[in-house]
Length: 279
Figure 1 (cartoon, one colour):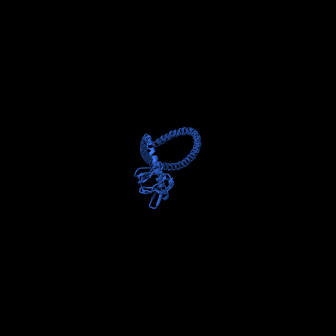
Figure 2 (spheres, rainbow, N blue to C red):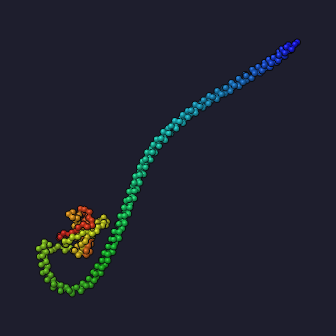
Figure 3 (tube, helix red, strand yellow):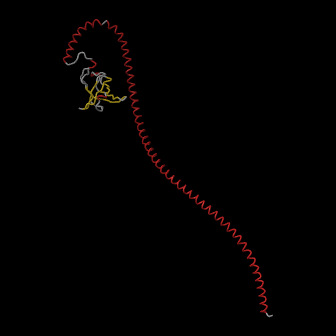
């Protein structure tokens, strides 16, 4: 046997071994594929079952998500409505707040005005208290004078006789004066306190007390004015009203403006005058 033959023999031997190993491998592989197939089939079934469960869960989650979205949309719509209502309420509250602030400013101004008026009234009260003290003193003085006059009354009784003697003379004088008054158109029986002399002056001062306007004029007791007399107030040709005399001093008097006769605002510098009248 030559070398080529040996090579062929070896080749055949090798190929025989190779084929035997290949056969064994094919046989072994055939058994492993079946087991793998069975295992994969089981895994496939499990995967299908799991996929169906996941699909069911997916559908359930999608339904739940859709329901949540619907609820969220409803909540959003509700919140938008509430926001609109809150904005409207806020606008209304802001308007009310502005009105309250304006009212506060008005009340503050009114309080300041009231405070100023209270201060003025307090000053008027102090002035009136001074006048009351003066009047009380005058009353005390008058009482002392009355006591003194009472003491002198007894002394005057001694003079009564001489006065009676003079009475006849005074009666004659009275007759003459009555005739004179009658000639001047004056009723002799009229109360002398009701006779108002003809005087003229000016308003020197005005003020208000307890809702009444008081005026001070430049004529007084020396001119014949007495408490209870009235004076007419005018400015040029314009009639302004009438005032009743409350208090007199020698050169001045204080009067109260009578509302029922007032036809204009009385000021300092206005003219005053009386008219001669009886009763």
